[in-house]
Length: 138
Ligand code: SF4
Image 1 (spheres, rainbow, N blue to C red):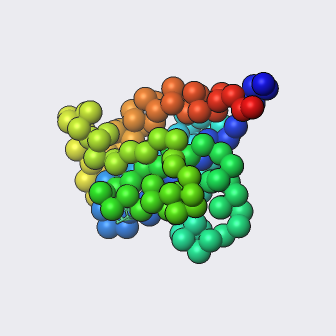
Image 2: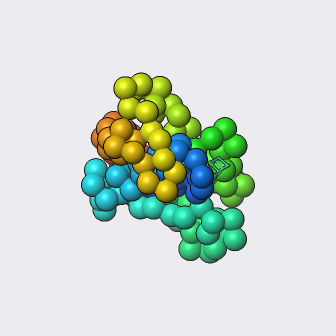
Image 3: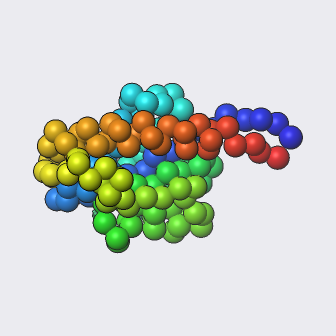
């Protein structure tokens, strides 16, 4: 059994017009650009929708953290449509219920509280990323 280091794919929903969609995206950016650069990689939900081969390969061969902006769970369901389950999935409202002093508002750009919530949440998800990246493969 070899210990392998995997990429962890972070897949936020596109979340247009929704504060929690913006929170999903910002949390994904924080993870990929500040908290765990080089370990996490982002992919774009519409690429899965159009069945892009590179995006499909990335998602099927690596653990995925899906972050959705509402109960429709487009990111999670897009992974499931490829025949696998995300390793972890969240609805972004959960991040707010864990930190009710930080109410995200805004759609194109989050307010200050929303930005802070994305940063704190990404810090909290670091442990999950590390666990997924260190998964052993047979
Ligand atoms: S999960 Fe909700 S917010 Fe995200 S892309 Fe789907 S409908 Fe939009």
